[in-house]
Structures are given as C-alpha cells and as structure tokens.
Length: 248
Image (tube, rainbow, N blue to C red; front, side):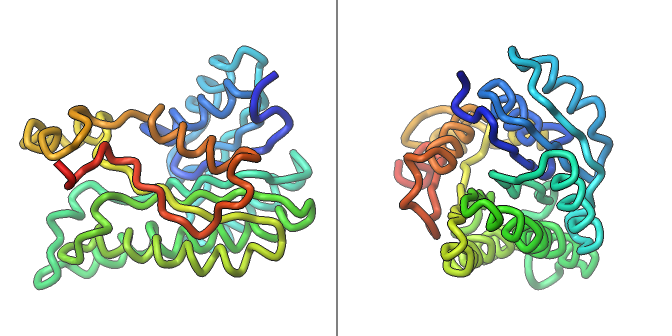
C-alpha cells in the first residue's frame, strides 16, 4: 500500500527537472499523477508510469498556467478522467536568468514573464483546483517559493515573496472547504546548480548549515508531510527546505 493510494495529484511544470522527479515519487507512492506543462509531457508521463511499481495512472497535459482558459481546461479534463483532485503542486516557474534582472534595468518582457508564470500561474491553478477539491471536502495545495524570497532586489525574489504572502490569503479562503494551502521555499538544489552552471557552487554550499545542495527527495519529503493526514492542521505556512541557508 502506498501513502498516496487513490489520490489524484496534479503537478505543474512537470515535463522535466524537479517537477518530473516529484511526479515519479508520487506515482511510486501510489498516486495517479497528472503532469502539466507548457512543454511536451508525453515522455515524462511514460517515464513516470514505467517507474511506478503499481503501474500508476499517469497523464500528461499541455497547460499554459498563465492562461485562465488553459488552466480551466486542465481542471475539466482532470474531472472527466479521474473524477476528483486531491493534491496540487504549483511547481511551474521561471527562474533562469531572473536573479540577474535587477529592478533599475529589468526588461519589460522578463518582468512580465516572471510575474505571469510565478505569481499569476499559481493563482490560476489555485482558482481552478479549489472547487474540485471542495466537492469532496478535502484537498492539499503546495506552492513553491525559493530562498530568494528573502531578497527584494531582483524580479525572481520578488515574485517568490509574493507567492509566500499569497499562500496565506489562499489558505484563509480555501480552509472552509477542507483545503489546506502551504508553501515550500527550497534552497538551491543540485538540479538547479547543474542547470545554471553555477559558478560559485562552493560558496553556496558553504553558506548552508548542512553542507550540500538539496535534492528532489528533500523537497518531496516536505510535500509528503504537508499532503498526508499529518498535515491536517497545518495551513498558510512557509516551510523553508534549504539546508539552513544563511544560518552558517
């Protein structure tokens, strides 16, 4: 028996990277998983299904989280195919290059894209998910922030601090329907470090109390706590999963 047997989980930004890893872990723990991404999800969905010992039902959907119509279409497809939605992981986000987008000279297209995906995208998915969850009186939503939320000096950090504040508002509105909304703020993961070809990797690790990069497993462990019955009375919170970044 898996800890997420009979649960239906939607993960945005799941075509690759951390999102694909989260999908694989949920499937391995028994969930039916919808991999939603603006990129092609067919290969990712097939990989996740193949990695599941129980042959979990995995579905890839093309979704643009900045589009209300696209997100609402996703919700309709989930309802038609699965009849329910239990967990939403708001993972879709833009981050590459955004830390260099300082406020004085941030190009409009970068600013608009960052807010459109990281903030509006999370809101759109929340708005589409809560009515489905409310039908059963139970649901879990996990937003993804970042250790960068502590900084107000670049476009990325500002979008993520907004996600954290928005999480509290979402929790207040969704709570009466039996839905909790929380947020995970990761430190720099091994995937992100490799993908960005991080030049100061040693310095980043040195700034952590736990001297390593984070892994997708570290972040999934936090998600499982928030999405299992153990998290029933936890909502509106930001859980920093960052190896003690900034404390060393």
